[in-house]
Length: 67
Image 1 (tube, rainbow, N blue to C red):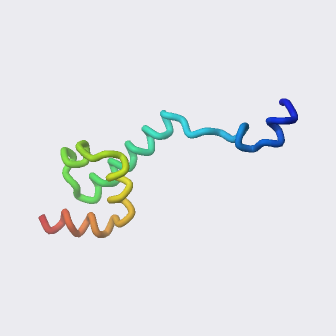
Image 2 (cartoon, one colour):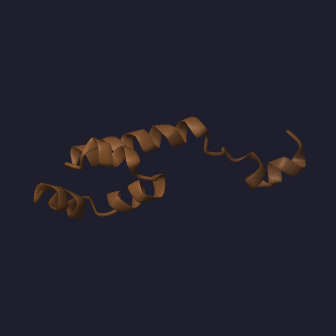
């Protein structure tokens, strides 16, 4: 390894891969479904919407338990 890349951590640190990202989204969708959200509704959500909903899981659970 060259000295320049050894000193620059940003050059050598691991990057997020597409497969890791897909795996995270898949598990997050499963979490929303287990909280009571309909599967059709989960499939229509964007990734950022999924993460926003999972910040407050109790609120999501209450919302869909009432329906």
